[in-house]
Length: 485
Image (cartoon, rainbow, N blue to C red):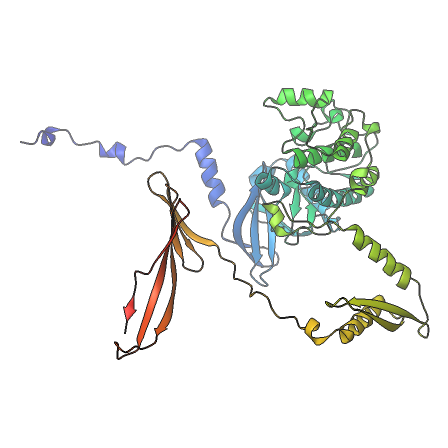
């Protein structure tokens, strides 16, 4: 007899009771369910569809939302009403909204509108699809000097705008610099921003991100424009070196390093970068460079800054082409030739030298009326082309460009056999551990074999080539699939 039959039945009353959730789990569950898939503005009736989560902070979460009326997309900061239940919390959000409303600059995140319902406050902002410098830094770890100059110029432009309006950001860090689809940078998150006060009226509270705090802020001497400049120096250091200058495992030790301005400059940094960082991270705020002085520093004046960065720079080192001395020379010549305003009737003769393959040189003269540089250049080019022999104007194509091929699928069995892959042209191959490379070219070709005396009918053959490259360097081609007709 089965002994399991004599066991008492389980207490179903206890088993049916679910375990009591912890406070953190309940809070997490509440956060997940508090935002509906479609949010409606109670005043205008407009509906917005919730998209992916872009980020989260201490008080709010940021979602991608789409206006269902026109498909316009926003980055929406969602603040639960429970987080602003106290008057000073509500005042903080109100001040952030009212301050951000007044900002209009190409390097500041655009404020669209806001509304609230019984559950949340919604702040609609410009969507920056490339996320933030923090995401780029996380993927790249370090950036090149031209890239850092590219981003810093835009940060300084936006920061000068804020300071000229008497506004301090007070929380400059990588996560608050957003990058849009065109790789343009925007300053954002004005939750800690404040009006610039005199030295006597400055608030002595410590606010901001620990790794970017200035010594005077930690010493409760107040936050000024110089404190934002200090944070800018920390941002520059982080982008070039891969970590903040004063970062340690212990927060107290970090604060101590900041107060003592104790950090190290890697030898890999360029001399100009080392000088600029040292000039910004000065303990005495009055000795730090101003924003204009930073832009005038040799790091910017003698270094190449690209006009644009490719989107690939978010994940890999971009290929940048600094202007060559020859380009500068010809640009200078063009200005000297075409820079002065000429009357429509005034003309000059420009000579164009054209060297042929035979070595003979053609001299083409063009009478140019100084209407515009573009028109003058077009006349010169057309004259050169008309004097050029036909064979040179239409050179034969040497090689047909080959399509780009990439790996679409792969499987890694290198612990036993080897590595298998499939290419975009449907070819498959295996790299065996002993060094043999086997490839199957899945591009059938048809070959016609002419008839002979022994064979009455014509023969056709279809094949797939099996190519094997052995580790001794020998190559073997097999034709396993033969079909005769």
